[in-house]
Amino acid sequence: MIDAILWISRNQAWIHLLLACLGVLLLWLWWRAWRRLRLARFGIERAMWVNARSRAVIVIFITLTLTAALLLLNVFIAPNLTAMFGVLPTLSARDLLTNTPTPTPTAELVLPGFETPTPDSSAEPTATLTPVPVGGANCLNPQATITSPIPGAILAGEIEVSGTANVDNFAFYVVEISTLGDNWLTVLTSQPDADGKILPVVNGVLGQWNTALQAPGDYALRLVVYNSSGDFSPPCTIPITITAPITPSPTP
Figure 1 (tube, rainbow, N blue to C red):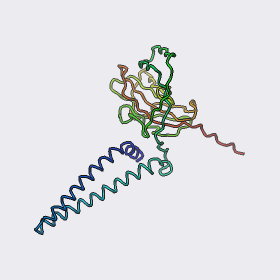
Figure 2: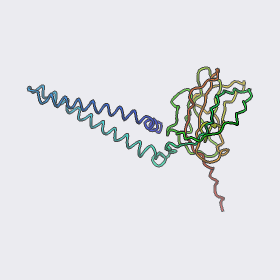
Figure 3: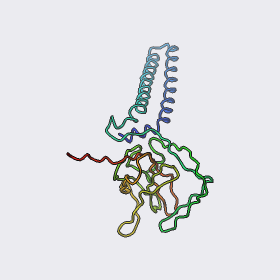
Figure 4: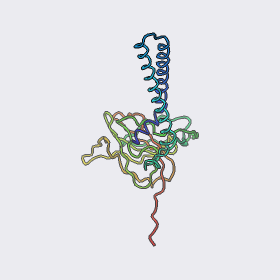
């Protein structure tokens, strides 16, 4: 149910557009039935257009009810998942500070076993704002997505990151966080099995992450899945918040 609410919240613009088009069509059908009813002279013909007009009125009422329910879900239910369903809340879109060097350096893929290139320290950072969508970004790809934690999750201590990393010609994956948009820090990476092979993950655990290693605050969390050519699709990115673990009070 929570996934359905998040999906509706992410696609509310398209749903509103669909309902608006449906409403226009129904109003036209009602107007046509009303006009034909005025011109009808026979009882059977009049009864047919009365029924058509009644059906149009009923469907218009249902469409208005769905529109009201959609507004109620997006305004009151989606932002208050914790209070209503006892799950972690869906946070509103937040602006995270990004660090975009000028000029922008060309991105280079560093495969395991290769030396990391030394970054150019001469570029001066320029602070900009990057919006993080409520339900995350680029997470609808079933071959590279994060299923846990959910977008807007509030995390503390040791957690389990789950999802799917199973692209064609799979090579490896990394899980990264950032408060600075382009300044990503790897917190998890794919591990070889007993035979030394790095295997894809399908609806499973990507790794264990101790969030206490990061300072409390708002972060972006993303999954990047590479293929054997070093390419990757747009990473699944979600907003999260890290808090300090709650220390239980000593028993007197």
